[in-house]
Image (cartoon, rainbow, N blue to C red; front, top):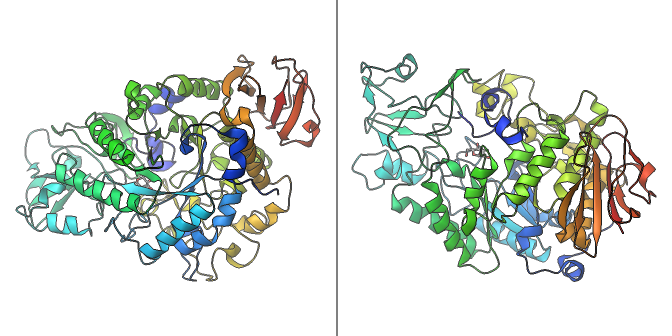
Length: 599
Ligand code: GLC
């Protein structure tokens, strides 16, 4: 595949042309009602929100089958509230054969029995309301499962009314001039796929169906046939599915793989980039299968549909894009009439050699804040598809991992941007990659082994306690094994340690809500020549807060020229700075964060 994910090792490591473009660059929290005084504004809720992604298989198992479920999430709503989270995004919980763990949906208007029922989802939404936590669902619109009735019908006959809901092609003669050896690997009845497109998950993107003597297109697994968005009936059916959940009170959606809805109608070959990827396929650009301009018409109509609902429902996009200019289009440019929150993947994901590059961060943050026609940035460092940031950004010394994770939290929560985080990040959970092929659950880790070991490592069960199965399940056969560090890295232990990852996370989300400058102050970069410390001030005029983060393994002494220079420390990851009272001549120990109000 070309460039859907940007930062996985192995398969997705091939897909990094964009790096250069992107980065040449226990105190309980107050409730929303309590905080509204200090931070009241007319801005829609999502503008200052912290959104927390939950992988439902891995969060909390309430019925002892070793797999997380909706009632499990409901039980943990109090915890989620006290993290300072405003909304959860739940990865797909719809009925699914689970080939791609829910991203292969067989019914958009129900819940997979292993996760619960529609009534359980209603209870979850109601519990969220009680705890001031909004619920966002994942909406997978690029493709369905091959077990969805729509596809079963579509594949039954060329004359079936659903046939044209998917992307079909008769193929070309295997002996036609220009047919490559690669295309010939997928020959059926003398026909080969019409072009060189490869699936992001391995093999040709075209799958033969004998009953109709045609190939269908699939960007992902062959069990995930792409919907044909050139057919208006598809849009209607998908919008109906979204309305089904909006009517039940969900606050919006995270739109899966949304740039990939359309393919080139001329089916032109994707340009070759040379070499082969972890799945053994040629490395291709995604020029003709992703980010086609047609998608924007759909998104504008979707935005108007969602806006008919009260309460500022929000559309978040999984938008891996090459640069900020492309991202701007997803907000709708000057019109701002598309996604409210297309994810900015350019800050947090740029390859398997992510590093704390001060100028890269500073330049990209500045660009994101100024080049999207007033769009609100949505920054993210972690999700269910990528090695966790604590591992990607780590340096040679494992002892630094925790501090680096805290430094990334500081960036995420103190910028004037919406923050998206992923379960376990608040604890410093690490990626636990399988060591034996026979243990791998994610199919791309099986087909790509050993170059691509799949995404299991970032999906291990949530670590609640030092007890059996880390409190995730009563069943010793959890669907993925627990990470070995769960006895020390877990909610119970970390809630009792003032310097834990968890307490740092909560301190920052609380400050973000309570402190007017961190809530809505404008950002000005400080000390812009520094290549070791990222620093900026957030200011409303009357309130100002300075943030300084040492991105290196050495102590750094800084002097920040801001207001009178008189400071009062609000939060720091190093006790030596707790009573620091000046922005001048201040030494930040390695990877230390310092947040202080200034006068
Ligand atoms: C998105 C999801 C990923 C899934 C893919 C196909 O990228 O985040 O988990 O495999 O889409 O639906």
